Figure 1 (spheres, rainbow, N blue to C red):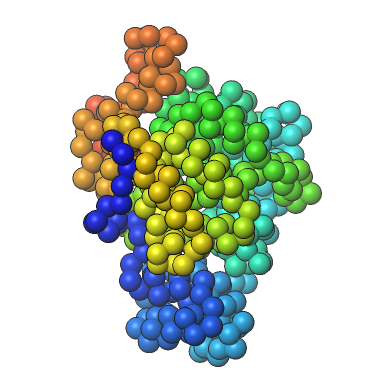
Figure 2 (cartoon, rainbow, N blue to C red):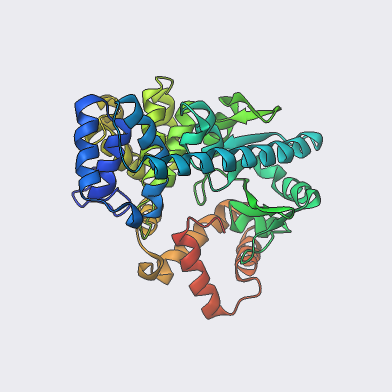
Length: 379
């Protein structure tokens, strides 16, 4: 099946109110002012949703450039100061974690917020972060997790700590907190995306990675093209309140002028991400005015979409309560094949589903699988 634009507006796209705020943050001159006036006149700052709240530091920055005086500046600035303080704390924690991984000779790559905040935003105080994300290679996942646990990081409540190969196959990442400061949290990834498999894409990701530094510790970061693919695919998921921040992240990446669009198309094809990339890049171009080339969207629409990739995307667009058990099981069968059964045969399937069940009754397993798929299956 070839990819195409969908007529139905996807649930992950920003609400009309969020869209006004995004334009006030991203646009310039009269367009930004018009969006701000429309948003401000229809918004009670005490009722702003959590995802819009995270955009307020960038709003204050853009309004200041426009010479606007807003009674809400004190609130905006307060959030910006908290963002600055929290981000510094997270950067220090990331530096400590990276030092330990480096000492253990485990290559690591910083992902998402920690790279975006310090590279693509004018100031790290403009991009709130809840945690920081690190990626290690699949073969280093077990060792890297042991290193962090040994450093004093502990797996968040409600998650299990994978210990054997089959349990690492079940998930793509594990969330941990610093035992000395629970506000410092890390998502340790050993796969960039859950249920997306391409050795070629993984090799290209690491080959094109660029040098990066956190709190004096050297590591790697994805190139701009890989960052864009990751941000867009991560943003194209159901949420009870649309997580609008991906729009800012992606728009700034596109505006940077450093995106290799040929690599974007290649990685999208390798990982079966045509459907989410078409939706997100088209929104950036048509609504947010981001300079996404027409040829890129045309190229993506000509890509063949495998049935498993279509199923995965459709499930990611649904709330956990809407997801059918058979479809969810089909996704896990897909993962089990790539992670274990392809090399181990039937025993690989048994090991995967035993690890998936781990300590749960069958009804609990069904409920947990649906919840986990709804969160992108990283917890």
